[in-house]
Length: 568
Image 1 (cartoon, rainbow, N blue to C red):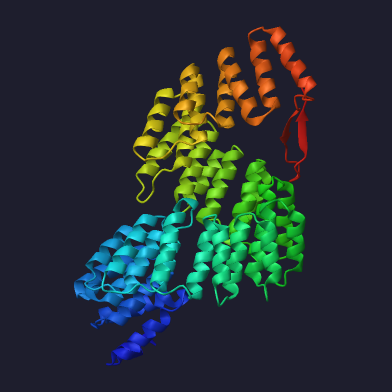
Image 2 (image 1 turned 180 degrees about the horizontal axis):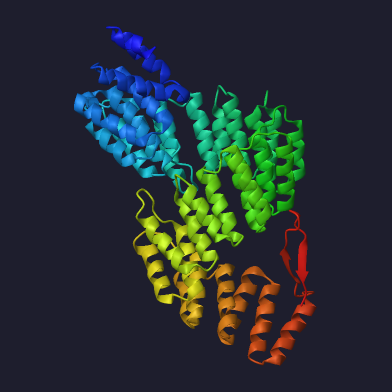
């Protein structure tokens, strides 16, 4: 077929076939093959053919070939063609190569609104809100007029409570440019206000909309659901003219996330055509409520019912198996991911690394990490934390060093929790301090209570409890019970009674009576032979109706998870 088309003199047939083949992923490779044959036969590609080839490469995800095509575009002079350049820009944005995209954008002599929107959307999707909004302002000052998609792209960047004021400024621009009656803009505003935690603004926008479609209803239900306004979400759901699958899923997810599993299951049973997302919400709800055995049972039902499982199904249930260190279940689910073709997915792979690490199978975690063709920050964090969890300090710090060499990856607060924990396993106080300072100075990451707790553990190992106590105040965590518990634990290990008493008073003041405090203080006094104080603490526990709970653990027996209890 290709030979017959190549023998024709007109370029229309060739271009039409390339266009047709590039429409779908399954035939995109043929489009590229035809274009290659055309070039070998001396035919020149026109701008429309190039746009189609860029689409084919986007479908296939062939990065290196896209770069080769970019070189051809530069040599043939099509880089100044706004349609070709915009199509290529869109591919770079899709793959997260924003530096390439912005450079290409700067080379377009007269970018159109679509060019601007693509770059704005890219920065918005990558979380670079200020850059996205800066481009919106530039576009507004140019000779071009922004369209409604300019502002909906900008709104996707403003989905955190800290960006609420910026989001309202975008809302003002929507009104200024006359798009306030657009259903698309209205739906995006409802979604944005919901994600920013301003449900009242979302409800107001919903009521101000003259025309509403099913997306409008789903957006307002989602806004209430995301902010755990369960009654309002259910009320709106029952008001909907005709709920669709997304409507049902929003409500099921809302109920499951707050632990109302019975009502979530009831809605699921009433749903006309439940899909994998419907079942996933229930599994995620069980895992969040630490009802992991029920999550595993529900996953088995899903499997038996023949419901298609996706990356979110597997990542949720693998997290559940990790919580219980249920290795047999985890391994079985891993087999399911291989059979379903999801084992190479980054989300699933990261969950498997975490699960195997928590089950003490660090070699299997390494195997999964090595098998992934793509790795994101979550994947690297999972491996670093896995090494730290298993006491492999050297490997964790080496992995951190390797991660820093990866293009486009930047350590976040979770990365440094893993790194500092790893230092804590081997008592590397000096290294821990250097990493902590690097986190704040080099990466601009504000310390969290978890970072502070890791540092307290390290300082405690070095016997510097007073320095640890000062750090709590210096970092502003004097009202956080977690860090005082960490200090109390460090005092127990060091046997420092005075600082332990200060930490105990703080925990009790912040969190009320906690048997953890009494047990640790009793043990600390006992280690110093202060038996009268031990008796006083135990008497206080009796008066308050407290007793030391029996230690317990989960043990898998033929994939069941009975509790094994050890009483002292």
